[in-house]
Structure formats: C-alpha cells, structure tokens
Length: 379
Ligand SMILES: [Mn+2]
View (tube, rainbow, N blue to C red):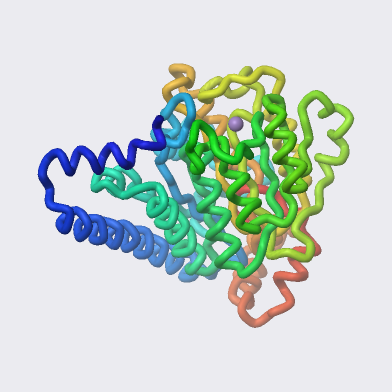
C-alpha cells in the first residue's frame, strides 16, 4: 500500500493540472539540485579531512530519511536528526569506549540528508529514488577518504546503498547483517522495494558474495527458502549461545572488495531498544552486538543503521541513544587514526604518520593486518 505513495504524489500533481512536461522538467531539476547538495557537502567534508592531514578512512554520515517502504509504520523517516542529536548529546562524552575522539573531524563528518521528501513531492517514483540514493552514496565515496555510514530510514535503503558500494568498488562485498528479520522476501505485499525485500535485491544483483544474518528470530518458510536459494548464512537467536564464539570472532572480506555492515536496530532485544516498528522479543543485548562488532576482522567500506523509529521510542529518547552508540562506540572503519591511537604515539609521530600516508602504498595493507577492524566509527 505504502509502495504506491510515489504514484500517489504524482496523482496529486496531475489532479492539480500541472502539465506533464512541467512535472518531468521539474523532477529533473529537483534531482540535479539534490545530487548537487550531496556532492558539494561531500567535497567540503573531504577537503576538511584532507586539510587536517587526512586519514586512511574516515566515517561520514549520510542520512536517508525514507520510511514509506515499511510494511507497518513509517516512523524511521524521522530517525536521522534524532540520531545526530543523540551522538552529540551532552549527557555523555564524545570519546568512544576504545578511546577514539568523535570531535575529531578526521574521525567523523556528516554530509547531511538525501532530500527524500522533496524528491517525492515532485512525483519521482521508487525506481528513480533508489538510483538517486545510490548516486548519493557514490558521491560520498568519491571524496577520499570518506566512507559512508548511512542513517536510515527503513531497511529498503540498504539495497541502493550496497549496490552503490559494490559498483563503486568494482565487485561484491561481504555483508554482515544484524536483524530480527532476514528481509529477503522476493517482494512484500507486492512491493519489490519493501523493507522486507532489500536482501533479495542485493543477492540477485550479485552485490554481496557472503551474506551473514545475525539475530534472526522472525522468519517464515519463505525466508528460509530464499536464504537457501541465495546461500545466505542465517544465524538464528535460538542457537545464539552455540554460535556466539564463532560470531564474536568473525573475519570477513578476504578476496572481495571489503565488508558492509547493515545494522537493523531491531536486532537488539526490545528491552534495549524499544523504539522500533517491529517489536520482537528474544534478541541480542547491546553488549552482544558490540562484542561481535569489536572483534570483527574486516576492512569495513560502508555501513548503515536502519529501522530506528522515533515515534515508538521512550520519551527520553533511549533508542536514539542506543542507535548513536552503535554508530560511535565501535569504530566502523579501519583507519589511520585507529592505528595512531592504539600505538600510543605522541602528537609529532602522529602528524608525521598522517603526512606520510600518500608515500607509503603498503600502509593500508599493513594496517589491515595490524588492525582488528572494528566497526563503526572513524577509523
Ligand atoms: Mn528488522
């Protein structure tokens, strides 16, 4: 039903007697302006990081406030500003558990939101909207060393994001997907872009070599069949205590272009994160998720955090803080700064290392060996 919303907007414009040629031209101009917005912001943030000495990899937030492909509630469209607010909330400090400083722009920047509402207001359908999301992700990746950390939004956005990452890097990635649901229906309620179908699109497109799904506890027979068909490694909560050791010692991405992490907030037990559209008891604890992410050995090239629904959150925004901490406590991306912090080098050595980054081609490889990459943020 919600999938038809793009068409609904178009009907409204038709009913208002806006001529078709005007709509078409207007759509093109709004899309161009939207991409310009992302391109220029990414350029600005890329320049900033490079001007400060650079990093091998640096996290850049990109909001995709899209909620209409949800099968139940549309609140995730309102999540990105709530998550940003929680990241910078004065009730906590900006140093991560592992000692990274989020105030350092080489660790974390933000390129703002894809203007989803404006694009849909002029009647753009989901085929084109998904392309615009992919193009936006590529524009961020264009600006070395920025790596996109996408704030959803419902889970439908993972398809255009993973597609963009794979196309930009020139091959498939390994995907670590934490979720209560496998989101792998061929289509849900007739919507091929449903938030319950994103991983069917990703696997069909050949954008992922391995897909590991962790936290699963709401799965139908179609979910299992589709999983088998695409060779998905599904780890269900009912066997989590048995799988824990394996999941807390993952090494992914060897022989492919890198690792993508897709984090649905409902992978967590609702006791930890009540602000989601689909409450599924029996999930992971916050610390379970951190243990998986902290111990992951991988070159994380991009990630998303999706399905936080502020309209279901507690009045004090507990789930927003959980989402923010998931983004920032673990470091998503292996980066130069990670090495610097871990090695305990002084300021001078740090700056020497930063300025020599272009001189040492082998460094990223060295770094990859040296680092147990963590997750999310910066570095
Ligand atoms: Mn889910």
